[in-house]
Length: 140
Image (spheres, one colour):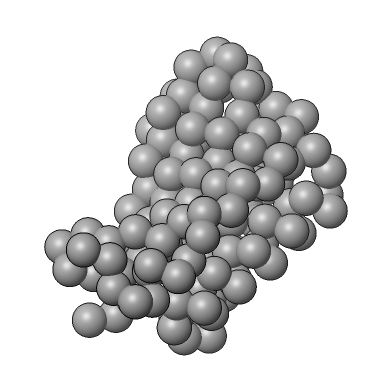
């Protein structure tokens, strides 16, 4: 059963097609975390992870979809974010999760850093579709 905090949180979807949309995703994630009672540090962790994922969808796939909603798991309230794109896919997920690995001459820190900022991260990728799902939970 949802707690009062999760019951009042509506799922929000944003199409990612520009840098302004990346900023909107970050802002929406932070606002959702604030509404659920997350502290400033966790709000910042979530917003930073969302920025990385949304920016990657824009950079590598030309855009995608962002979806944020409240979740509950094992009695803990949290936020789940899904970022999906229709780009070339991540050929080697294990390698992409290593600090310093990059396919476009960046620092290669985005995905590994996003993983460290949240409680769970799942990546499913094949050519034509990549889906990354992250979860962050309120402290118990």
